[in-house]
Amino acid sequence: MIEQWGRKREILAALAGGQFVSGEELAKQAGISRTAISKHIDALEDYGVEIFSVKGKGYKLANPVSLIDEDQLTRSLNHRCFYFDELPSTNAFLLKHVHELTSGDICIAEYQSAGRGRRGRSWVSPYGCHLYCSMYWKLEQGMSQASGLSLVVACSLVKVLQSFGIEDLGVKWPNDIYLNNKKLAGVLIEMSGQADSECHLVVGIGINISMSQSQGDKIGQAWSDLSANPSCPSKTELAIALQKQLQQDFSTFEQLGLTAFLPRWQEVDVFFGKQVKLLMGDNQIEGICKGVDESGAILLETDNGIKAFVGGEISLRSAT
Image (tube, rainbow, N blue to C red):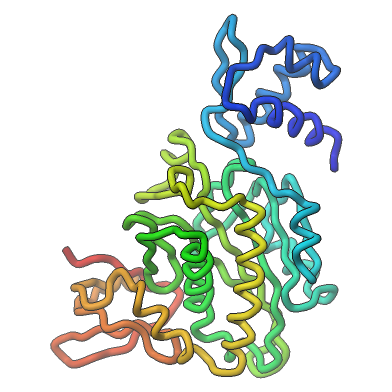
């Protein structure tokens, strides 16, 4: 662990109780000056950790910060686990090292300086507040085999969260996960290789665990997190369960394709049977959502019958 992060982790551990702790006490525990404590606090705030500072009382976390237990993570999984305090992007890290990886290897970072979502959007990634995880998988039949895989990932996420007792979950085509009708998690799949031969696949997942209001204000849509849920697992437990479920579901997908997952998708599809609109550049199509087909395309019932639509530049919205 880089020394600067060791100090910051000590400060976060001292503040984990949710009470104010004086700068003097923090300095004593860390064996450094109060000036150094102040600099580390400022740096943590730059990384998105919201900390209250009150003269005469000290410092207090505005929201809980949950860090991965690296020992528990590596003991619980039979694959390599790359864990960092800070990375530009967990997806980018795995894509850079695909020739050294085996299917099921994962990368987790507490902070991403260049986290990405679909269609080039940034993914707000404050330190220690959420789960930022990527998993590597090799598809022997090439990129063409990956059609519909993002829906499988969404189904995996829902199954894991439900296993911890979390309810009121839903999915929105192609791969957004909702809690109480607000976005909880997103998926970004990136590939390298050939269309009809060996293909390297990296699946990036971001799950909101404890969002501060100031960080939430940076997000241009309604969001949710797991902080108020009494069934919320530790971030480490969530990461372990997610890797195992993804590995199981990816193996099933390779053998049976997306067909095996269509009932799971339809069960939690937030738009199934509802009036929706598809935005495709300057074009807009309205109809009733009829779920998805075996290729992962969304099905819309229009005046001209049921049509299938698929593509990275399509956005799905409610028509009401």
